[in-house]
View 1 (cartoon, rainbow, N blue to C red):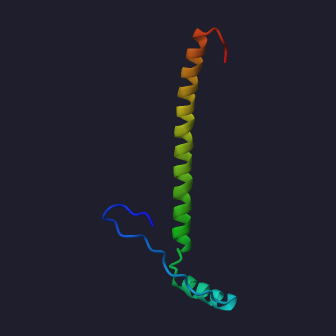
View 2: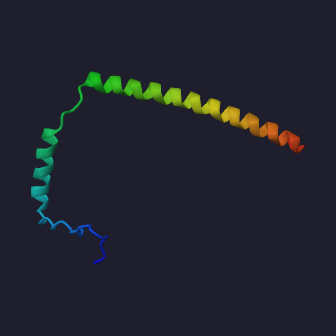
View 3: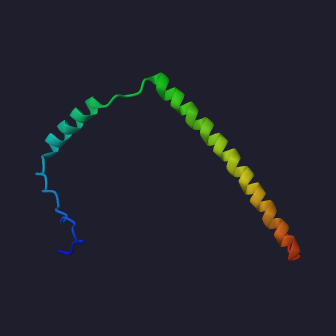
Length: 83
């Protein structure tokens, strides 16, 4: 095994034993109960924030696209080509 000078060799973690499908479902249910789910008010607030940020970014990138497009059309006008 090749290692860097002074570095410890990397060891693989031991494989975990496989579990039955029923035990897997039970583990999933246990973990799901631990999740702190957002309230409907929090969900609505976050949804509105995502929509606002998406709109702001869309307008920003529209502006950037228009500026770059105008600059490219300006450069192409020197070549006698219309865009």
